[in-house]
Length: 51
Image (tube, rainbow, N blue to C red):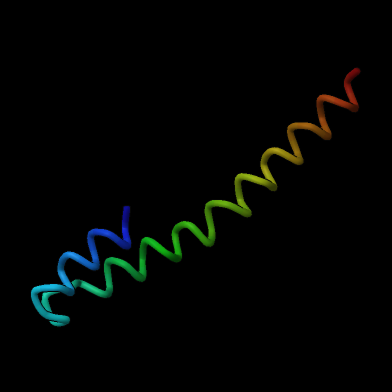
């Protein structure tokens, strides 16, 4: 969805795209995916320790 939005803005002109917003969204995904994997690992570790 992000890329489509950025491409639509880029069709008008490259300066119409807010590249800073796109960069923050990409960094959010880079941080979110490993963080959610780590939380899942910790939860599974505790579940297996209890049972």
